[in-house]
Length: 155
Image (cartoon, rainbow, N blue to C red; front, side, top):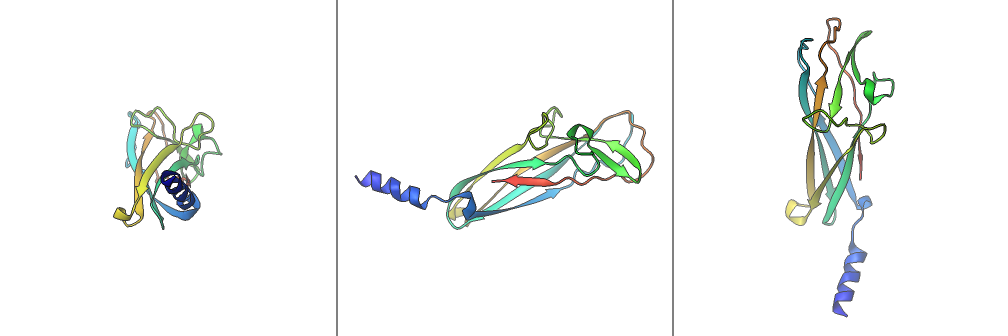
């Protein structure tokens, strides 16, 4: 009987995602100078930090949009410099085989989790690496190329 009461008490006190708050920070994927004869690779980081009033194992999913210059298509991610464009892609893996997106159109999201505990002062964080690549053999006009990606955390 004591076990049933203890389990019932744990279920009543079990926190939900609504009991926590999370924030996200990201470092940009900076490619540097593009040389058309070879693909250009770079990385960035997305960090999720969560806190709660009680301890829990906390899970989330990180999604990226297609960017402001893509026309909404993940296969058409591109950076802009004025009216010139430079195609690139963001991946979940260093082999550049899995496009990081929102889980639609053949893209994938990245899961994460951490344990919010009193030992961590009711705070935890986790990071994911963004692998960027500019394909070779593009002939862009000289300039500084940028794009803006929106990161969405679902928890």
